[in-house]
Each structure stands twice: as structure tokens, then as C-alpha cells.
Image (cartoon, rainbow, N blue to C red; front, side, top):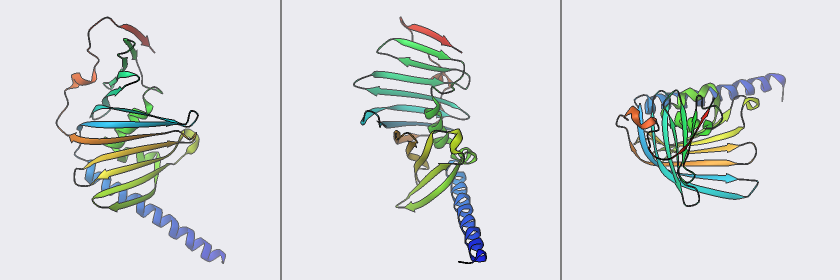
Length: 214
């Protein structure tokens, strides 16, 4: 193949990638522009490669723009576990140990949960960090595979997202990590009514061990 043909092929490939990026960005704007609040039921399955085992949890979650979230997890082994973030402070509560951890920032601890919230409420924002590898629409669903733009700055290898075109929300998020681990969230029963801001602040009363972190 001549250098000219190689050059034209590369230009065509770049144009195709840009077109896919533009199409999904337009679709995201269409689907998610009006979603400011969301409450959903969910199931989470987390695969740990080192132990070759999958852990499953269920629960409810509440999201509100710009960056508030609450996750209520439940499982037979670990019991009730909750994450609250009101935009300023992250709280992590474990009912089994009766321990409450307060954090001034959410760096590291709830990074995955926050990433999922971004995908559900405002996936367009992620396009500054991820590029569209492929997109497919079938049976009223749109599936998208995202790859990090810079793999040096993240341990995420790829993200699979499935969107319900009719209900206008993300039904599934599957995050694959470079170490072989992965986490899958499946969402159902979406409600888009405004969430009370009190939902995102830990308000349980009782005899807890409370720890403050920077």
C-alpha cells in the first residue's frame, strides 16, 4: 500500500471515530439533558480476579445533580452498608460493625460509585476522559464501549454502558479494570422525582463508633 493510501486510510479511520464520538455525544445530550434527579433499584456484582470469586449486592440509590449521591447496599455476608455524599462530605456507614466514617473529600474511597453516578446523570462529562470505542443501537437499547483517553492516569481498562432509549436512563454499567477485576451495576425502576437534600446527609441515631478523616 502506498504512503498516500495509508494516509487516506488513517484520515478515514479518524473521521469514523470522530463521527461515532459525535453521534453518541448527541444521543447523550438528547437522553440525559433533562435528568437532574434519579432514584433506582440496583444489583451489583463485583469480580475479584485474585480470589476468582464474584460478590453480589443489591439495594437502592439516589442521585442528584451536580454531584450528590446515596447508595444503600445490602448483602447476606456484610449486611447493610451506605454511602452518602452531599457535595462536601462523604459518609460511609456499616451497620454490622456500627461504624460511621466521615471524610472531607471522597478521593479514592467512593471513586467507582461517583463514576457510575456521572455515567447515569451526565455521561457527556466523561467524554473529556473517555473515547468511544464502539456504539450499537438495537431493540430500543443503545450500547456503548468507552476506553480511557489516557491509560496512564487511570486503572480503568474499559466501560460498557447500556441505555434504555424509551425510559431515557442507563440500565447497565460494567467497569473493567486493568488488573482483571470488574464491577457490574444493573439498574431498574427509575424515578425522576426531585430528591430531598436530606437524603444525602447521614442522619441515623444510635450508639455508633464515629471516625473523622481528612
